[in-house]
Length: 134
Image 1 (tube, helix red, strand yellow):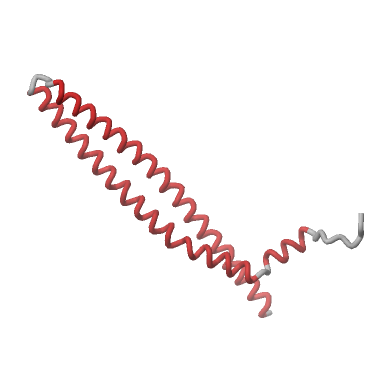
Image 2: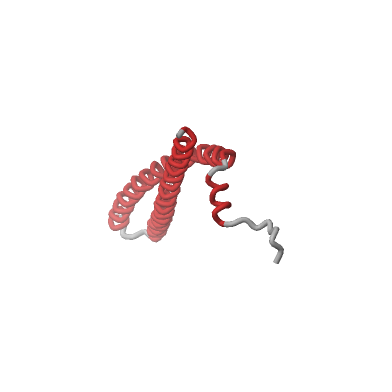
């Protein structure tokens, strides 16, 4: 093996990784670029989940009313089909609501990771600045 190897040690890579201001600025810029979008998306998902819950409640009330009407109308076959369609729509709304809930949980996790990374980078920057000042 050649003694003039270009392979660097883990310590050298770690040192270069931690002290690269261009990379830090670029990473912070990318993080700051995505953070508002993730926050807006998180707010919209939360709003959509709330609206889905309201819609589910309205569909429940409507289904109950339709069942009452169906009983009063001696179970007209066409009407029974419409009630089934309504229940299918309610099921789809429930599924979509569950998907949105899961998406919001993931977005919240991503948001927390971004904030953690920003705090870590700020701590590294503060540490580097205090070391350079000393």
